[in-house]
Amino acid sequence: MRLGIISALYEEQQGLVEAMQSPYKLVHGMREYFAGQLWEIDAVCVLSRMGKVAAAMTAMTLVEKFQVTHILFTGVAGAGDKSVNVGDLVVAESLVQHDMDASPLFPRFEVPLTGLTHFSADHQLSLRLVSTAHNFLEDEFVSVISPEDQQTFRLSQPRVHRGLIASGDQFISSRKQLEQVNQALPGLVAVEMEGTAVAQVCYEMGVPFAVLRTISDNANEDAATDFMHFVKSVAAQYAFHIVKRFCLASKEALA
Ligand code: ADE
Image (cartoon, rainbow, N blue to C red; front, side, top):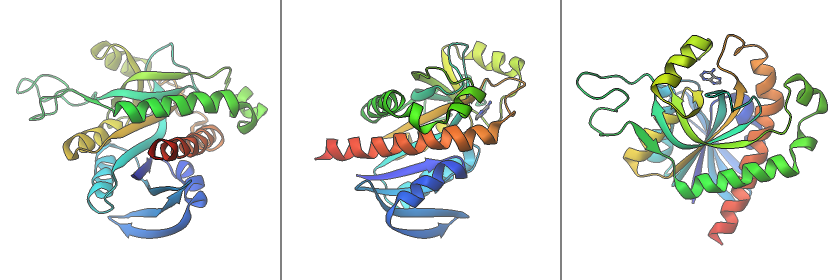
């Protein structure tokens, strides 16, 4: 297994790169790729930056230049539904581009010439991710997230959801915007800006992948408030500890 780990934000990647054994850095296409061992798993960490094109080119480089065999994406997302709260975790079951519309040539949301609107995440990797996320919340959440941050972000009993994630080149920051996406794509659990691009590249290249998102906001008018504070003090912690558990579980599965 050679695991490509894509983070959308610098804060999420930092801890992983510091934890890497015998890392080496390679700069390619305006990105820094860190290759090495993470908890005995051969890994390559990279920051995708935001948006679908940025994510697609990063995923493709991981596959073509670094020969990764699996991809894990970690980042933050807006809640896609009222049942999903800030501080919850979402693991993608399938992913769709909410801003893809080549109608009337192709049905709305269908990626032309793939015949697909939705891309499925790898079942096995996603189940491993769900279980490591659950274990993290149960065993480590209270010790890793300070009581002040738990209070500031009203993080009481965060949960893990598995379901549909919608990606688009838009930061969703109004109720109206979210309602429009939700009406067209019922059953959404999260909205973000990269996952489906990674999903399409992985589908076309035959690489299994999984997507983990920490809910940072309700995709409404308050979405940008405290965003960076949340990323640093909550999402980066979640990502680090869950990726660590994910690597350890993957090592066990390979043994
Ligand atoms: N990532 C985190 N929050 C988001 C939002 N509200 N819309 C799109 N991407 C996001």
